[in-house]
Amino acid sequence: MRGQLRRGRPLPAAASDYYHLDSYAAELAFQLVKLINARCLTSSNFLRKHMAGPGAPACIAGDPGDHRAFVDAKRSMSKCIGWTAREIPDWDLVFFILAMCGSGADYHIPRLAGLWRASQRYGPPDYDGEVLLPDGAPAPYSDINEAPSDKVRVQVLLTRLCAEREHRDFTRPA
Image (cartoon, rainbow, N blue to C red; front, top):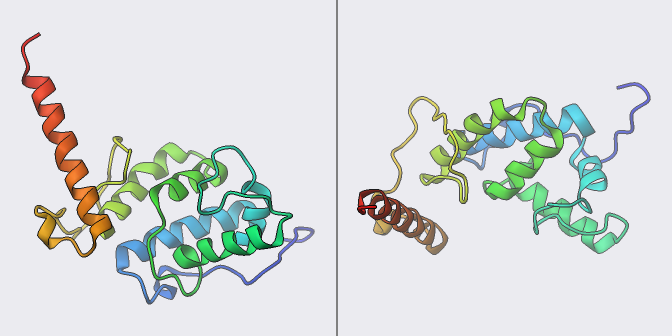
């Protein structure tokens, strides 16, 4: 770390540091932290380097020189990977962090998709690649009435509609 800039509070050091998250979301957040630590040392450094880049998710996109935009981006990152994280990151942020910080990201994507799916109990939105579920992962929601929020209910319905459409397209005669 000699000669490298370290600004801001250090990121959590273990998945167990995420006491507000379920074990799957905690492991996902910690894996993202490890990626950020390896490339940028802190989430602030990550944001300074990438928040203005192409493809930055809306939750962190902006000009790092604009104090308000930077503070808002830091707050968004803190909600899902900081010490007091209380929510799982949106899948577009997970994918962006992988793209910016991952080496051999193809290896990480199925594992992180599995952690995301295990925590949320529905698949990552707009992701149709391989999913490696961790041991003991709960089954996906089978009924929208099980879902804890409207956001999750919408995702469960979208998943169901996509599956029905694919089934119809597959079984339709050519």
